[in-house]
Image (cartoon, rainbow, N blue to C red; front, side):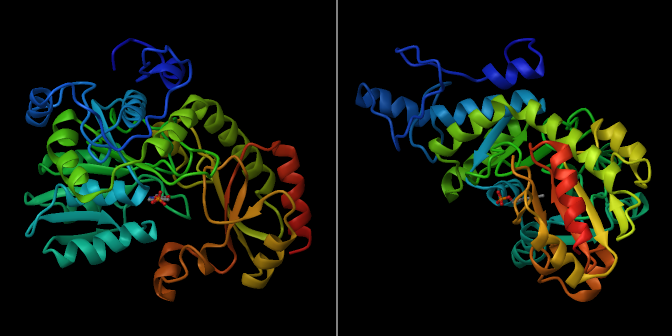
Length: 393
Ligand SMILES: *Cc1c(COP(=O)(O)O)cnc(C)c1O
């Protein structure tokens, strides 16, 4: 972060680099490598590459670097490393840090692939993993011990939109010397204050709100320069999970409108949640911005917003939920989120299909549950669409 700019200015300008042509738009440096002026220069760069000195696109690239600087400035971390997908970011943050014998505590309500890394991959390499109910601070207190290397959680859970208290969990973790790694996708960088709340490392799937138009997979790990350059970078650059320059260019452009989009989507989500609450066909409407959400105060304190997703439970179950989805005219049936297009997801049969029945029940993934990622359409049009589809459910 070089200047004392506010967020909206940084989203447009931070990290920009211009070539000798002075191009207005950020250039895509679609090149795998870089030519050196001399053999001596190549040798020097392999010993230590300075700022704006690049070697190979897997190690870094000017377009990717622009994106890393822009997201780090927004998140408030010293540095960032851009990755090929959100999962490359989650895997990179955990695997670059941990070694056999280390202990990690994680919340159980995780995106399926995150659960796979913690439950299958890390364990295979001798890392001990303890799962807790992330909303229960007593469980964190009991599980985090002086030997715990890191804690991991999604700050807002998928698909039931529970909030995990970043400040409280960070306090528990730091008291035992553990690093706090937060998957902050559902909160978005716009509503994130994770650094001031104590998070050490923040991970995003940029596939979601940062792209915001469902075009490209990407991810990013944000943290201190020490963690990013000494721990993450060597692991990522040698194992092949770096972001491509073309993807970085898409994400840079997504950043320009990120604040406007997330605020408009959250405004739409709040309107939709309020309109749906109390509907006779729904047993439950979950939105962290509704006063009825059990953690409404925490959501306001942590994010200052209810976010861009709404979940609701169609009381009559799976067949009614399917009739509802099939009747939607604006909202699309898909499984991404954070897209400009509103997306309806039936978690029990898609994103969370593979979970055993008792796990689904424990996580509140009922047969009638719908997750709605609210897009940029007019909220009144979306409400009319949801209402007509509920009529036909
Ligand atoms: C989508 C998502 C990921 C994975 O990101 P990809 O870009 O699909 O690899 C990880 N965590 C959360 C919370 C997500 O929503």
